[in-house]
Amino acid sequence: MAAPRTLTTPGAIFLDPRGSDRALRVSWHAEDELVVLSLWRDNVCTATFRLGVDEVADLIALLREGLDVRFADRTA
Image 1: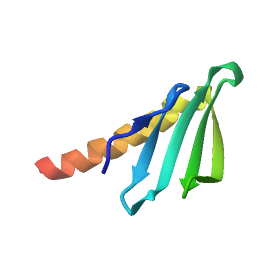
Image 2: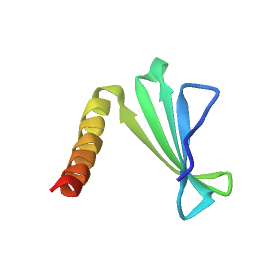
Image 3: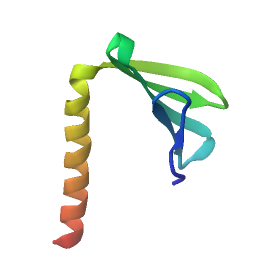
Image 4: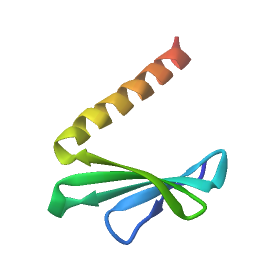
């Protein structure tokens, strides 16, 4: 998978391994206390999700838990 590209505002673009025409963009909107997750295909936004800044830690914890499980399976 390609490394995320940075945006002009705080955030990043993650390319989908199924093809570079698909991407997830993550952008911080501090003024609105939001993180916006958006799905893109062929440079067209197909969906967005607004995550309140107070929920970001929960999302990070879930992602961390998934990584921990993955790596625990490799060492067992």
